Image (cartoon, rainbow, N blue to C red; front, side):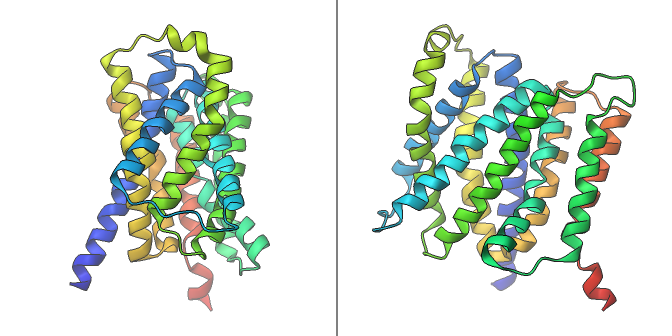
Length: 298
């Protein structure tokens, strides 16, 4: 029974990794092929996800004094995070590069958690973070004669990383208050939707009316909402409960790999030497950050 439970935990974790890797491909498709405005994509994604979560799951009430944490959580992610991620994908133009940068979050987040909650920081984490950053720099250089990566896109992705780290700090606070993962996800999507609606109506209202609602566009929106903003978070939370967050974080290293495989299969991207070397370096750094080499030496 225990082995079966552990197996289900790993299956759930793999599912979340695959879905989050695919999210970059669907977002790139909406931006570059379907010509959707950035804020509209996120607003529609959160709208569908919020309705789904509140219909399917029994959501707890927010307890007295905790509303401020939910507001802060939603402001960091999905609100500010999705702005950085989606605009980053738009200006970078490469789903794989965006996925590799976003995969730095599991490395950077422990630094912030260690600073705020005074937890011990592993030496492997510091080394892994440095190697991973070098990999991102390598991917941004034009060393093979291909197109260079947009600095504006990199800055937006950095903003996404920073807000995701802040999200993890606030999330840790809510986890200690014993809220269910489904309730946290439902509220963060719904509150962020309230933040996004005025922006969508005010800045992209005219563009929204001109959207060509093809089957491909509807499929991408629903895939992001149902699979990535709902199912993936549920699977990740379930996996964390079974195999622990520290072990599960290793699987986040596979997100850029999934993105690249899907992008190449559907013809959205072509592999080159710069991309291969950069991705390999980042994944090496991420793997080092999750290892126990110093502990084994001792």
